[in-house]
Image (cartoon, rainbow, N blue to C red; front, side, top):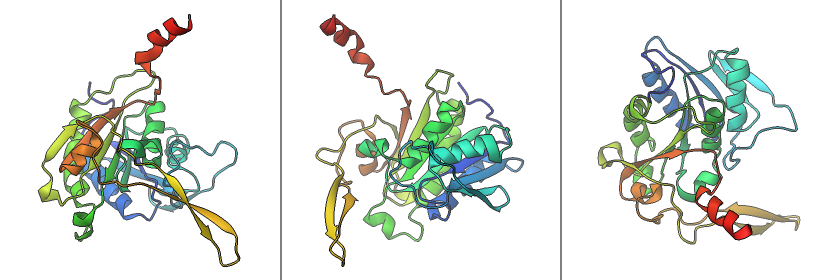
Length: 270
């Protein structure tokens, strides 16, 4: 099914979790402008400060300030999911976007990173609101750090892939509707080998943990640290596809139910 509202001129809402001034957001704005077309609109509502690792958090217990920085450009003191809500229900004045794009994240949101990602959280909230949504992330490595623009692969390949998903992807209207997670490999645009549809993987023995640190006053603080990123996540998975030089595309839903275990568990507990 073609995404609802997909046409030559689109109204696109963009957000991210790296913050309103992040280079990846500029890349996403360029991708969105390409997709929206000459008669389209690109609206930006992004966090005023970096919100990496907030997942699908919303500011449910306190208000958030929002500020207009320029034409169709807003910063909100909240999470990416907050920004999507602000865009749909305030900034756009009730005019729903045709598409929400979240990213382009600096760093991969593949494997276990999906569960922590504010970039994914923004796309997930859009899907929960019934709006077609795609998260985009750029895997970073030694070969991207050598580039003038480390987001080159996303910038070059992003527009065409988003168009393919809009025109040929599955969207539907399920209660937990689909959204898509795209990860670009840590390579130059010319070195990208192609695209693979892949499952969310998990890197073996890669977990978040803490590292203690003593301040000059002797107080103890803990830094959250991640594990190795450039290891495979199993066959036919997003992580492995990226490491092997491919763009990964993963269809996702917010439903966390282990459906394969519903019947067996009911039988065991009966």
